[in-house]
Image (tube, rainbow, N blue to C red; front, side, top):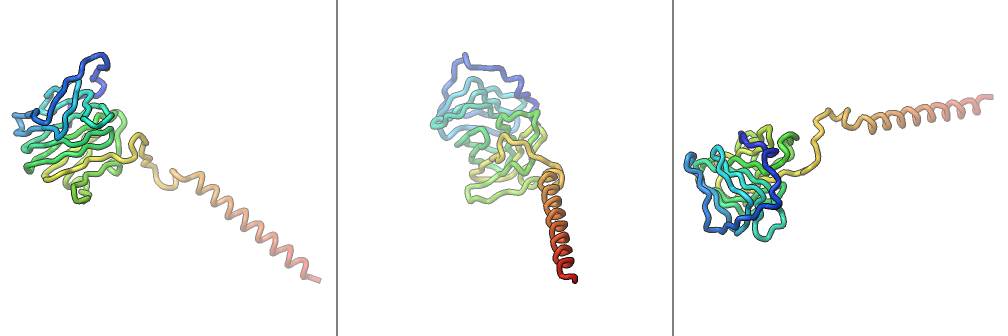
Amino acid sequence: MLSISLFSVKPVAAQRATQFSTGDIFEIPAVNGSIKFSVNGTYVSADLVDDTWLFNNLTLSGSRFSGVLMFSAKNCNVTIHMFRSNSLRYTVEGMGEQVINLGLNSSIQSHVSEWSVINQDSVFFAPEKQWKLLPDNTIVVRELLGTLTVVRYNYGYPVNEDPFYLQHSILILTGITLVITVTIATIIKLKNRHQRRLP
């Protein structure tokens, strides 16, 4: 699990951005990994902390999004192609492990159903087999090759884990009330018809 707090990242609006190119390699020697980018871009800071690269205010060329990305590559080499607030696309060489955090608020835990890991052939990989979600919204991907996309759906919306009947209690009560009302009205109507037919 990443031990870097997102709330420790200070505002950096007044700081100057550093440019990087596709030829720059961000090595992680202790775990035999490296990260590079397929497009040029900028960041305000890039620090290797606990074998994880922390890119602050990362922006890739052709994108208007700027954010925090934490990425570790263990026993593999990674090329990052796209970075957005809710998704990351990269190519991995080597049967290793990638640890990814898109800079989401770690105090609000997301649900595994909000995430997907997909390869270039649109194959969705099952959680807890090839990847898992940690409590701080970090994704750990293991032993997958090729181009992968890590994406969070339902971005910004909390997942309600209450049972169905609690999530839809008003709708259920309204339906029950409607059924009772229609039933009573039908009984009264039938009773009135029956009384009219009696001599």
